[in-house]
Image (tube, rainbow, N blue to C red; front, side):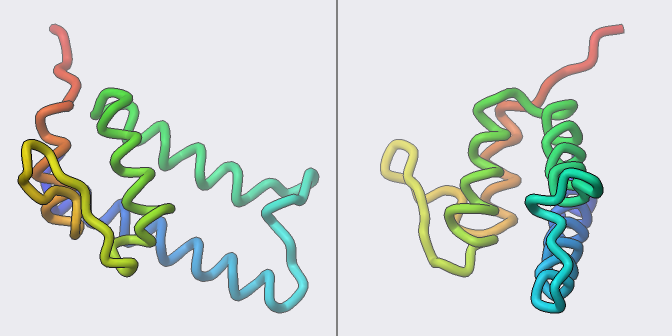
Length: 105
């Protein structure tokens, strides 16, 4: 997956989550809503998208970046062989390329 596509997916997810947060502030709960589990569906789509392109280790890094590092806003970084990785979206994308799934013909 090229960076442009990767960024579009992350940005779209973030925008939709922000919209769901705004709806929650108005009294609409889609997180724990059994009739309209929109939040769970959105999260599932994100996971399926990345799982179709990357192995489990990469998906774990993506989840860490989104949820633990709050899209990089917390300023957290990780290191691999003393090299800083996953500190912004570009570095995350660069790092997870090694975990790309290859389609079989």
